[in-house]
Image 1 (cartoon, one colour):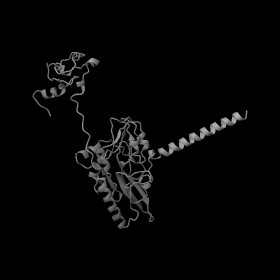
Image 2 (image 1 turned 90 degrees about the vertical axis):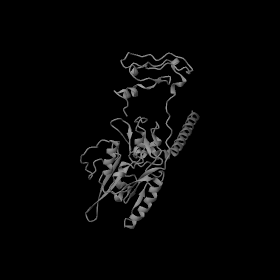
Image 3 (image 1 turned 90 degrees about the horizontal axis):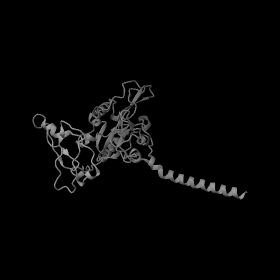
Image 4 (image 1 turned 120 degrees about the vertical axis):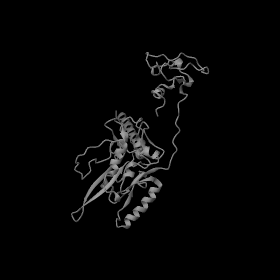
Length: 341
C-alpha cells in the first residue's frame, strides 16, 4: 500500500532494510545509506564500500564483505517461518457414473493455475484432444467409446487427476527432496527445488507427472494448495456441474464412496467398484480414488500399479545371491584349471 507524499513511501520501501551487520539502513535521498556501527556490536569493522557513486545512495551497490566484516549479527532480523500445522488428509472422490464429459474441470484447472492450452486439434480418439495428463494438463477427462450389442455406442467418461498416493513412488524417487507431503497430506512438487531430472516421471505408474518444455521441471496437480490454505475447494471440484468430483477429508470421502457404490449397484450396475480406495498388492491406498463400472484399462488406469521401491529389497537379495554364486563358480573354475596342469 502506497504511503506518504511524492513517492516517499515507495522510496522508503526500496531503501529501507538491513546492512551486513543487521543494522537498519536508512531510506531517502541524501541520507547516509548505512547507519553508524552500533556501540553494542561485539566486533568493530569498516563500513561497506560502495562500488560506484549513484544519485540515489539508498540504492547504491555494496561490495562483498571481507572475512573480518562478518559478525554474529549477520542473521539477526531474519524470520524463520514456523512449520504449517498438519491437517487431516484431504483428497478427491471422483464418481465416473456422474461424469458427463463436459470438461469444465479441465478448463477450471487450466484457468486457475494459468496453464497453457494443449492444442485444439482432432486426436482421432473421440472428442478427447488432451489425451492424457501432462505438465500442462493436470485434470484430464477421458472419452472411451464402447460398442453395444445393438450396434449402439456407449461413452465412458472419467475425470483423471494425480492420485496423491499415500506412498508415492515419485516422492520416493526424487533425489533432491523437491516432492513432499504438505500439511494437507497432498503430494506437492516444490518448483524451486526441482532440478528436472525426470526420475519422478518414470516412477509414477499412472503417468501423472510431466516435464515442462518451458522450464524443464516436473509439474502436476497441486490439489489447489493455494485455495486449500484459504479454506476453498479446488477449482475442478468447484466447477463440476454434476458433483462427480467431490473434495474433502479422505476418511469422510471413503465412507461416502462406500455408500455410493451400494447405491449404484442397487440401480442395476452390478460391476460398480472403487478404484484406489483400499490397499491393493504392493500399492497402498490413494487419496484421490474413483468409482468405476468397467475394467481400469477402459479408463486408461493400470489394473495393478507397481511401486519400484517395494521390490528393491528382493532385487538386492537376488543380486547378492547371483554375485555370490558367480564368485563361487569362478573360484571353482580357477581351482580346477590349476589342478589340471
